[in-house]
Length: 346
Ligand code: F6P
Image (cartoon, rainbow, N blue to C red; front, side):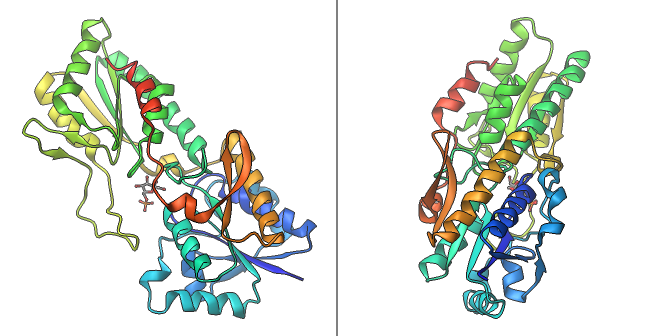
C-alpha cells in the first residue's frame, strides 16, 4: 500500500486540522496510508511521527491549531538537514510528503522538490501572503476574529471619546489589517506596503473629529511602516533573536503610536495588541471548506504523481500551481484593496 507523510510548519492556522482530516479521508478511498510527521520539518530531522488513522480524525474538522504540532525549523539551517529528511522519509517507507505551510515551509518544500523529493504543498497562513493563491487556509478565520475585536473596541471607544489603535498580525503584508479595516470600519489602516507619515495619520484623526465623530479606530499591521516627524521609522521590531528563516519577532507598534498620537493630537488614545488570539480557535465555514478542498486535491496530486505543486484558489476555482510560483515573490497587499480601505480614512 502506498504511504504518504503529512506535516504542518510555521505558525499554526485554523483549518489545518480540517485539511489533515480531508487528506486522511481521501487517502483512505485511494487505499493510501498516512503517517503524521510531528512539529513540521523538525519531525523529519528527529523522526518524530504519529499515526493518522480514520478513527482519529472525526473531530478535526472544527478543531483549531494542528494536531501534528508545528515549528519554525528550517532543515537547510541544520547540518545535513535535507539528507536527514531523505533518510526519515525512506526509513518510514514514505512514497510522498504533503507539507502544509506558508512562505517558509513551502519554500523548503520547493527546494526539496527541486532536489528530487516527491512533495506536494498545501497553502496556509493567516497573513495570506503566499503567492499563486487568492486565499490561504486560516486567513478568513483570523479576519473574522479581528473584525469582531474591532466591533467590540468601537463601542468602548465611542463611550470614552477615544482613539483606539488595534495591532494586527501581518509581518510583510497588510492583507489582514486592510481587510479587517474595511470590514471593521477603520478610520485609518497602516500597512507595510504603503508607508504612512505620522503627520498624515494625525490629520486623518482630526478630520474624523471635524466631521463630528467622537472616536476613531486605527488598524495597524505589526509590520507597518510609519514615518515619524524627522523621517525616522516607527516600527514593531523587538530585541528577540531572529528565527531559522531570518524573521525578527514583531509586536508593539500600536503602543509606540499610541504615545506619539496622544502627544501630537491631545486625544485620549489606547492601544490593543490582538496577538495570537488571531490564530486560535475554530475555523470559519469558509476555512473548513477551503481546507477540505485543498486537502482532497493534495492527495489527488500525489495519486497522479504531480509533485512540486500545491492546490490553490484562483478565480474562485481550486486548481494546482507549481510550488516555485507560490514562493517566487511575496504576495503583498494590492493598491486596489488599500485604496478601498482608504476611501473611509478620516
Ligand atoms: O503566522 C504568521 C504570523 O502570524 C505573523 O503574522 C506573525 O508575525 C508571526 O506569525 C508570529 O509568530 P509566532 O507564533 O512565532 O510568535
